[in-house]
Image (tube, rainbow, N blue to C red; front, side, top):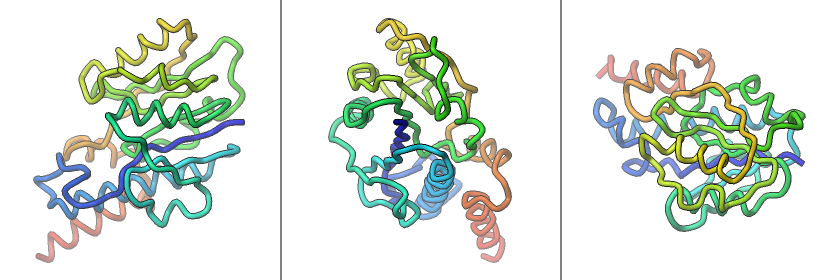
Length: 211
């Protein structure tokens, strides 16, 4: 069985994507975060997997629908929350966040398909030094718990933890997390015009021009 877990938080103004403010208002930043999450959920919903989990802090968005099992995030730091999500899974498990809405089904094909026999983990490095994906043949929270998060060396430390545990790790392409205005522009270049994120930015730009 393959499980895909999306780690997310409720998109409340002032609690998400605050680094987008300025130039965006906190309300607009929350709308951008909601669009990013919706696009991520849409991609995951299109995958052929047995189980989809939205592990969220706060209320789930309507986009989760019936396609996702909604689970509340555990207390603690991000490492504790990811670890708890992993401990709640069995079999091949893929964990991604809500900050890479540009990720496509093709980008995830290897991790949701048949794994090569010499791969125990897939690792998706992020351009800011973190990671956008972690997939494990045998999910274990202790492989993440205690890794310092939100640092320039988080990804390196997390990958090293996997290797030190004896896992055979294969890397995916580096992705840019949507964190601030500069990274938003980078992500938008990879988004189709019909995506929720592209439409949201288009709406915000129109409203700004009218104002």
